[in-house]
Amino acid sequence: MKGSVLAAAAVAISLLGASSARAQDEVFDSGRLLATGGVTEIEGAGGGGLVPWALITGYGSRDGVGVNAHATYVPLTDFSLLTEGVAVGLYDRLELSYAHQTFDTGDAGARLGLGKGFKFDQDIVGAKVRLFGDAVFDQDSWLPQVAAGVQYKMNDRGTIIHAIGGSHDDGTDYYLAATKLFLAERVLLNVTLRETEANQYGILGFGGDNGGYSTQVESSAAFLATRWLALGAEYRTKPDNLKFAKEDDAFDLFVAAFFNKNVSLTLAYVDLGDIALQGRQNGAYMSLQVGI
Image (cartoon, rainbow, N blue to C red; front, side, top):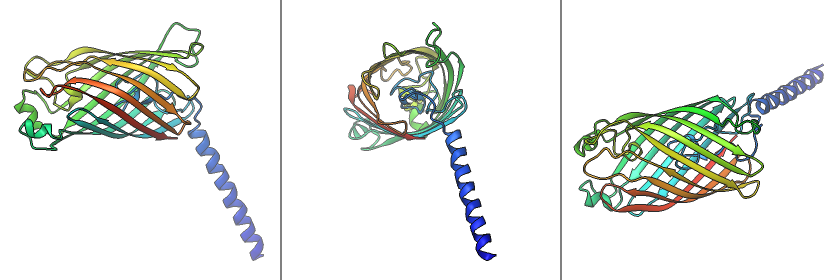
């Protein structure tokens, strides 16, 4: 009798385990094509390295969920930027993200009177919702996939931001992204309009002597050289709100390798323009993304 009970319990546990695994597979269904989840941009949203796309992060279909984590390191001429974060894509409709940025001034910190290696930290909470269109399945439609997004940014250096002419140490960006995928040609095009008052992505605060909110244009173009390798470029305009230092536009040239739907690696050359009177800041961009 005891043996029968134990055997029945073992069978029940096995069935529960199989049921749980099936349920997990159904939730994290990874139903979209490889590379259509994009990578993670420096503020945590799904897209390219500098520009959010209308695509929802992860590979979850309309019946599934996708989750990923990323770490991005950008060593520049005089500064460096480290971004870490997580993002969730819900049913190919809604994206929620969090990113933490650490901007290290390195030796330039001493020249700026802040101290060598002085750091700015910023937290970014984001959300994106697909409004209409489907970049993958609406190939016969001229309509792109369109999404609206918001990014709330909180900087930890309010005293310094006010000293250099910034108006706030927190702010909100609003954007509208349109993405069109041409599968036969293996080309993806994206245009994003952003309403922002962020100085250097918010690292130097928000608003300033020269103004506040303005509309900026961001664009991406990518070519899928193979099933798992994408080549592309991005360009992003930025506001110029601070009198003490002119802010330039940014661009990158990237290579993204999608080893599978769980791991991708992006390498790029990035140019962020002049930052804080220290000359042109360019260098490498390295980002690792893992997810389910």
